[in-house]
Image (cartoon, rainbow, N blue to C red):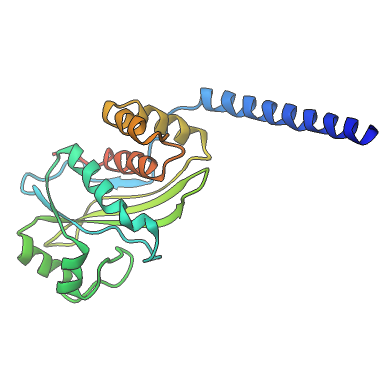
Length: 218
C-alpha cells in the first residue's frame, strides 16, 4: 500500500514540475519578439539588369534524406512569392545531365565552367545557391540555411545569409506561429492537421519565407 502511495506522490510531483516548466516556457515565449535574421549580407538594391535568376536544387549532405523529396518545391514556391525577379528552376535531372551531379554546394568545388554554362543555358543574370547545413526533423525542429545570390557573370555576391532556425528558441516559436496565421499556411495546416512546430513541411515553408524576406529589393 505504501508503495502505491509513494508512486502516486511521485507522479503528482512529475506532473506539477512539468506544468511549472511549461508555464515558464510560455512566459518566455510571450515576451519574445519574432525572429529576424541578422547573419546576412545584402547589397542595398539589386541593379536594374538583374531580373532573371537560376534557382539551383537545394544541397544537403545526406543525399538519401527525406528532406530532399520536398524541400526544392518549398523553397521555389516561397521565393516566387517575393516577386523580385523571374526565377528559372533547374531540376536535378538536368543538373545530372549537364554537370554530372544533381546538387552542388556553394561552399564546395563547382563543376568546370559552371556559371558560364548556366548563363548559356538560361540567359540569366544571377544564380541562387541554397545549402541546408543542418536538419532536425523531430521536436524541436531545426533547419540551418546558408544561401547565396550571385551575379552569374562576375561571381559577385548580391546577397548571402547563414542562419539556423531552431524551434527550441522562443523567437522562432513566435515568428513561425505568426507565419502560420497567413491565410494560405493556415489552410494548409487545416488540410494536413499540422502545426508549424509539428510539421517539417510547414516549418520548412516558414524557414524559406523568412530567409527570402531578407533579399534586397530592386
